[in-house]
Image (cartoon, rainbow, N blue to C red; front, top):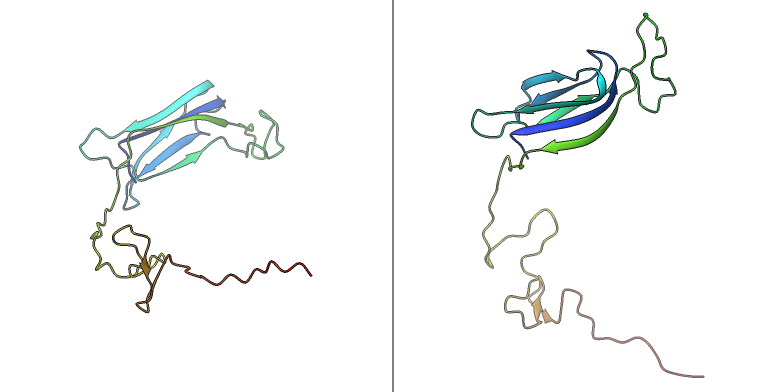
Length: 154
């Protein structure tokens, strides 16, 4: 699916360039990269106002160390930078729209598909009788009238 807009709330952003969202279209082209401003709560969002919804994928970078990585927020890292542990809270998206829609005919001539649907094993008139691939009628896809249970009390 794709959407015209997507946003996320970040918690405890300390550094200007540690947290961002990158937006991509369906062909994988980068539309935008938006950085979060430092603050207790920071919102990053992007809305495409030029016609059809174009955002098909986002990549989120939250901080410069993993949230559960065992490194405390503000600890000095190699290279002299400080750890910026950032969490994500709420996510927002505009109404999603399908990228590709493939319509299938809804009639008895539908061929078997790759998902295991067997067009020959259907009950056309809702009377409870099914016809399997061999043309044999029954009461359902697994028609078995044999009752192997026994009531013998020996």
